[in-house]
Length: 595
Image 1 (tube, rainbow, N blue to C red):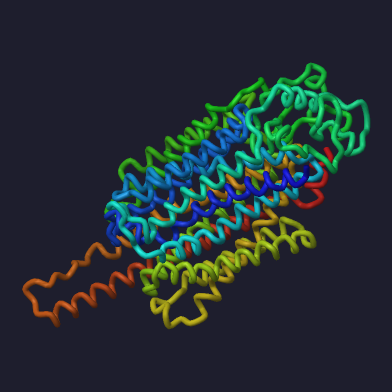
Image 2: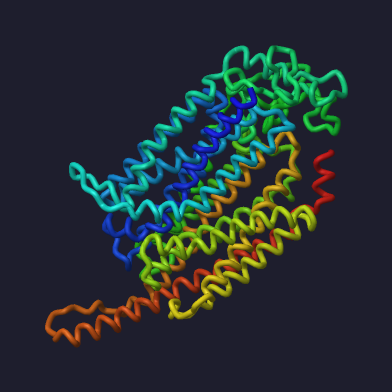
């Protein structure tokens, strides 16, 4: 039944790819969307929520809805998320104003954010501990592929000619979201055919058996952590949990922590993280000591606190009128409230018996440093993916696809860097490669901050600088993921992988909100004294001369805005390099894994 597992993995990877594509798809069509929903070019800050709304929903929903799949089953939650994703896509495609397009994107983000942890949890159900990393890597590759292809995907679909059917716009940027409806339907059919429904009592009993302590050292084939095909009978390592109809609802959850299985008293009395894995109760992935996990618990409080904290930070950084100040009048109080709620979230997660992302068996210092690098790299990544297409459209005069192709230089280098980072990390260690990668990225963004106003005449300089920045950030991807896995126990690899994604997406959310707030404020301050020329009371020649002068000054202000934002991003990468110095050495990580 190995082929059945592969089909289930393919279906799960497809839904993750679909959600990842839409996380980045608007970066190359942001200007057309803004124009169509009534946002003028000199008020582009009002388009920021189109990006941050999706990211906010994505990050906030990811851990909580992943836990709900433990309780209600993978298939029902995936179906619900696909349906919500399609509804959000329809709302976005039909949007005629700012509020509706932001609402549609937020619904998309909530649905899309849940698909990754649910799919990773599904892998924990179907694969045993020895085979699981390869399957998790395949899902991670789907996530990264979406980030690389999203802008190009959006640029290509935006080329579909505009067509009105019954007063509804189907072409242009609208087609990006209309096409999600049949794609979500196809994904739902594939999930229905390959993924089992709610966990059955038999599955629960089998998961309970896996919590029982082993009588002594055992081979992988006799490992009680391996999913059993009948109660009390371990499956071989080659079979794993081969039958998705039997094991898709099991509770070994790599990306979440709430489990519907109560631990036997014998299991609860054994230390959770002793060095001898065969001499302790084998827990499912991501689960802390069974004594601390009430059956069927979902950390709703933690999920709400996380969502509220992120929402307050984003709202505090959003300034609809940056001409007067960097932050709105409510900015500092709301940001302070967000920081307080974030502190309450941390306090709750430390003391709660059920946690959103439980990495209690992992050394906190090295883990936080590694996740910090992922956070800062995410901030730099999204600044690039949003503002490089805007530069191409405003300073180079490119259309949607042309802007996507300019960004493609960066994305191609990012992909190559990701492969190179994995090779280098094996020889030089994760910490050294992460430090070097963030430093190279900082150099790339510093070079981008020195771009001339005449970008069209800059030749290969623009391409070369984008490649340097892309290589630097790409090199960091593999070492960060590898370091988190190495510093965490094997039973928590799935939830550790999810934590890397959450940290990067949070960096994207907070980073784009903060950097764009500064950039739009600078643009407004540079253009506040300009008066838009009007073709009244002057001859045509005078009007054209004034218009050309006004346009040149606006272009110069845009150039200053963009280059200063890249300089800020260079400092973000330098901070990332400094934080990477705190990542664990390979020897430290090996020690942490063994005890």
